[in-house]
Image (cartoon, rainbow over the protein chains, first blue to last red):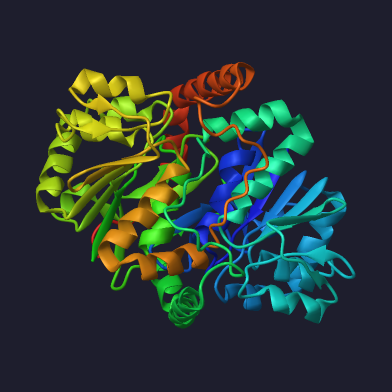
Length: 234
Length: 234
């Protein structure tokens, strides 16, 4: 089973790593981290770097496609026509097409969510309308083979549900136990409709601060690329 | 604030990425992914590779140390005397020393958990006794400045609690909202004491299968290192 996780500079790591940690346990899972150009991919914080071992040009199908989100990087991705064509092409081959967080905006820009219900991070969900999608505040939203999840950590819930659709509830429950997913957040402020006003304001400030970081991303990317070279070919 | 996340071949990615995603939002956070040898680190599944930008020899202090777990790799780490000395040395400088999943076995082997309560992944927690630690089945366990968390996903809960200890509950609640951590697992099988017998048996089978993968890890590590070279020095 080919699980293709698209990664890009500026992505939020947990958006990708949550679903990966669940879906990689599926029988015969073959997970590929794929980027526009293979090599080192710098996340939104600049601190964590992931390795993409394939260019998108090398990948023409997937059983499951996962598109993670980002603080602002998704806006660039959602304007990249070559990328959007690739996503639309992979979607034609996939059994499941999924997104986490603002990754749904990329799916929407690729034309996959027109007239469909979808969700996203609370800071990005309003953008879905611009692509004719119907913003829906649920932990994850399924429309046929497309499943979109809310922000960052929601990819864990979404992928457990997806696993249950593929291998049944019994195995999916075992994956949950494997990652000991028995969440006990010390506070109850993870949902924007329930968090108090001060928390929402603080979280918006953090979003703004993290967004500014994105502007310096390209210097970091350049430095990393000069530091770490990925040999092309074999 | 220096946050040092120790990574090693065979680690479970979410163990490291969960706390990273929370703690990297702390004011003035400087997160370093550190390994015995800097370069590409291969996770337990072999599919995901993370980049360590520092050797442990380059790091001699941390405000927060995070040690993630693994399926079996932690057993190798817990026998590596040079690593254990480094962990003990960093612990002398740290304000907080933490672990996720079987990472606590590494802390225990470094002598940090003697006569202290600690937790771990349900598949590894019994090993704590061998190091004089007191196995304690809670989501996370604090003993002064040391906090150990249960398996894989528990690092998210632990690090939100830790953030609240450092910057107060108000900011920590905003970090929770930032990552939209409003967990809604589709099933209730994340806790080994509540999961049904069949789920536990299946999860043990997966653990066994993943453990076997570890044996082929070194071929993968060799291949990746020849593919991706990290230039030493500046």
